[in-house]
Image (cartoon, rainbow, N blue to C red; front, side, top):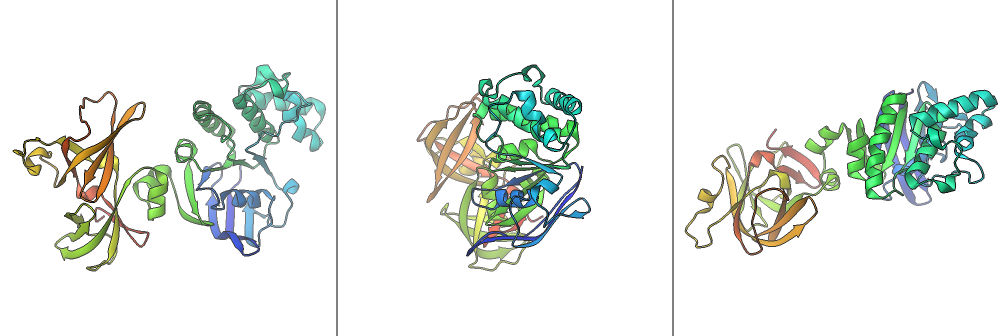
Length: 377
């Protein structure tokens, strides 16, 4: 195991800055996911860590060693790529043992170590198989075994599951997590898939435009995103534009796209009347109740007793998504969505009047892309 430190790391390609003054620490034995959209610099960062790209400036440390100027073959790292890159003329055991052969390990020892790591990835029965006869998931396990066989201090994974179908990818995520826990090796894993990062990672570093927006444990990042980019990237949410109207005791009043003013608890940041805001209403925070169509029921009466904020709307779309149903509700000049499990007892249909209610303490408030606070905390 080894820790990783990237200090002031920058990579430029002519006028393009792919990675910009990046700082990152990875603990011994940690599984860290670099998460971000295509083109954000995450694979370039991984390649600089592995010695496949030379930094324009900055330093790379593995353990106590500065390896910035070392070529890839001198670093105690190994990389698993998107393409499995297995040798078609070699069987599975020979593929796994190849790196050990290049390191000068004796035949008896490399066969023993290759078999040991094939057992770790549950591929022992395929050691004599031709790679061309394997499924995509099996090929990925062989590629992983080949990288683990040389016992690197740091294993680098560049979107290794992206070529698999959804079901197999989810299965491999769990297996990769279990393999990491068993081998006690530091993993740095690149992905653009939020669910994959949350399944695998001890910690997540979210990248955007060559910089790291936030680093933390998965739950920490989800509960407390530091920026609007992080909030949008981590999953579906309802973003509503608003403008500060006035300050009140314990919060502010904001005009919104709902064509209604709402109260927002005081955020951690200075705001003044007229300042633009973006408010995130996460769908799981909504409570939606049917409103009597004859107009004889008030919004307050339809909302749950313990809810302090509620607005009237109407169902505009109902989308069945397998295990859940997504409902779209038009409120004023915008719409929001919420989801219910298929098994939930609901008979809401397009056109039904409803009351959408929430606890203001659950709102996330952003100004100029930066997090101002959650519920005034």
